[in-house]
Length: 302
Image (cartoon, rainbow, N blue to C red; front, side):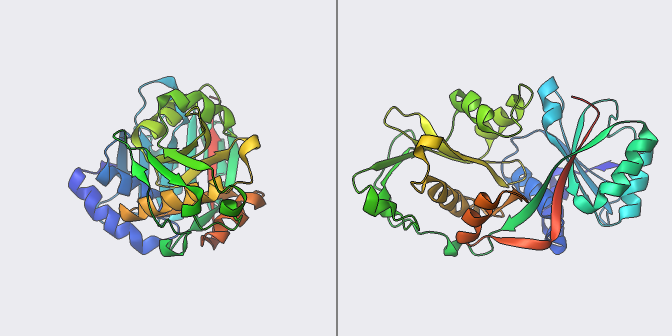
């Protein structure tokens, strides 16, 4: 396979727009690469420029890096199958692999796993939710102040919220900040897939990609949202005693506007049974891609 150069990635970003929604996840990865250069990955194609298979592979420097996704997009399912059966220098089938791709590849991947002699497990299946018009999100009317550290301080009256938070908590001050490394254990412990090995991935997300959190009076996060290397919003969480105050809506709104202003796609993945998150995001203007399901498959044991 051919590894793409910096200039190739600029061309690829434009081309991938022609294959939405299937290409949105890899497109988000390339957008991040072209703007931040934070997460060390390699991008491979079978041919260039008329590629049929695209692989985005994380750089493995420590054990936890295996938790990061190997992201795949294919224009031709047969070419993808043949490449996974034949390719040995790009993918190490002896190690744990978390492959992010489309659900409809499941049967083909089972065939590959059997032929490779490795176990496979379907880790997650998600809806792809896209915000096509960020202007539909709740509006932020004014920013009260910005500290030298970059912290935003707003009052809840600055937000239009379905929960009528401003009426119920008129004197509450909503302090916002980005997450930092000291919040790693908190975020990891609240994530459904959090474990010792996921800390490397989450640390990378906190340090290198956009995030936002609500801070309490002691400057401790009580609600937060992160951005995956694919640009997808994720790990949205509010601690139980602070739920029902509209913090999640505020965070999604702020991050959506921020990503949109940076030229990034605004979208997220929601597990099919997570109706609470589905209602939250649809209320903010996100719409489901009805004919597309994203899936993550694990090969080998970690």
